[in-house]
Image (cartoon, rainbow, N blue to C red; front, side, top):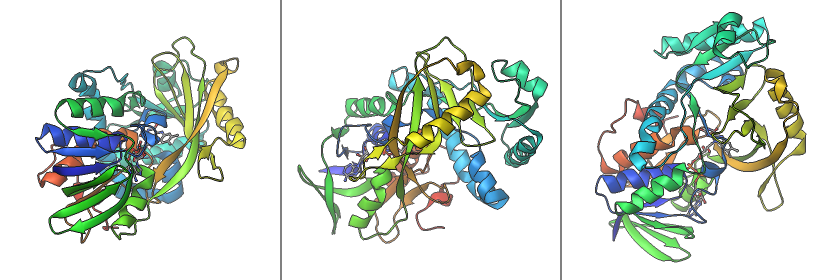
Length: 378
Ligand SMILES: Cc1cc2nc3c(=O)[nH]c(=O)nc-3n(C[C@H](O)[C@H](O)[C@H](O)COP(=O)(O)OP(=O)(O)OC[C@H]3O[C@@H](n4cnc5c(N)ncnc54)[C@H](O)[C@@H]3O)c2cc1C
C-alpha cells in the first residue's frame, strides 16, 4: 500500500511526488493522460515575481496587500527554480534576468509607481526606471516607452521539460508514477481514502489533489464544493530569431508577456482569451491574435517582419482572487489540495514542496505564510 496518492501529473503534482519520495514517503502519482500535457506543459514559461499589474489595476491596493503571501510563494519558488536544474540533473533553460513592466505614457508610469511602492513596502526589490534607466537596461525596447517597473527576480523556464524532470527524478527515488490512469471516484475509509481509477482501485492514508483546472471536480468526489475553474487562453510563438529579448517583458497598457526562448523563438502571451469547442476543448480565438500581437509590436516594432509559426490554446486554472489554495481540506483529514491559479508554473516547485511538507505535518523549508492559503480561509 502507498502512503500518499497524488492526483494529477502537472508541475505541482510531479514536484509534490518528488519531494515526498525524497522524504522517504511511499507515493503514487496518477495522471489521466500523459504527464505534463495540460497547463504545466502548455504555458508560456514566465517566472512571475511581481504583483500582476492588470489585476492590480482592476482590484486596487487592498487586493494587492491580500496577494502579498502569494507573491512570497512565487518568489520563494523562483529561488528553487534557480537551483532546480542542478538538483534534477536536467537543463530546464531557467534564466532569471529580470522583468520589465513597460509604460508608454505618464499615467502608466504613475500606475507602475504605485504598485512598485507597495512591493517595496513588502520588502521586495522592485524599482521604477525612467526613460534613461530603461534605455540603459533594455536598449532593444521601443523608444516610445517612457519608463518601466523593474523586477530583478523574474525570468523564464522551459515548461516542456520541468514537470517530466520532476517525475523522472521522483521515480528514480522510489515514487510510483502512473500515467493514463484516471480517477473516477474517491471514498473515505476508516484509515484513509479509496481511490477508484479506470485501472483499478488504490488505497492510501493521504491524498493530494493537484488536478489543476480539474481540482474542483476531484474535490467534488469528496463532497467538497470549491470555486476552482478552468479558463481557455492562448499564446503565440514566432520563428527563431537572433538573440534580442533579455528580460521578461510586460506592458502597462494591456495584458502582454514576451520572452525569448533558448532556441530564439519569441513567446507572446498575457492571458488573451481563447474559446472552448463543443466538447470543452480549448481552441485559439482568431480575434485575440491581432490585439495580442499589436501590443507586442508597440513595444518591439522591429519584430514586424518576423513570422508567427503557431498560436495554441490551453486551459488555465483560475480563481477570482488569484490566491493559491494549498492545505488540508476542512473536515477531511489527510486530504490535501495543491492549487495555484494563473501562475502555477512559477509557483510549481514551491507549491509541491509546501504540500509535501503539509502532508507529513512538518514545516516547509520555505519562508512563506502558508496559513494564508488554507482552503476555506477566504
Ligand atoms: C496558455 C497558458 C499560459 C500560462 N502561462 C503561465 C506562465 O507563463 N507562468 C506561470 O507561472 N503560469 C502560467 N500558466 C499557468 C500554469 O501553467 C498553471 O497554473 C500550472 O501549470 C498549474 O499546474 P498544475 O500542476 O496545478 O496543473 P496541470 O498542469 O493542469 O496538471 C493537472 C493534471 O491533473 C490531471 N488530472 C485531471 N483530472 C484527473 C483525474 N480525474 N485523474 C487523474 N489525473 C487528473 C490533468 O490531466 C493534468 O495533467 C499558464 C497557463 C496556460 C494554460
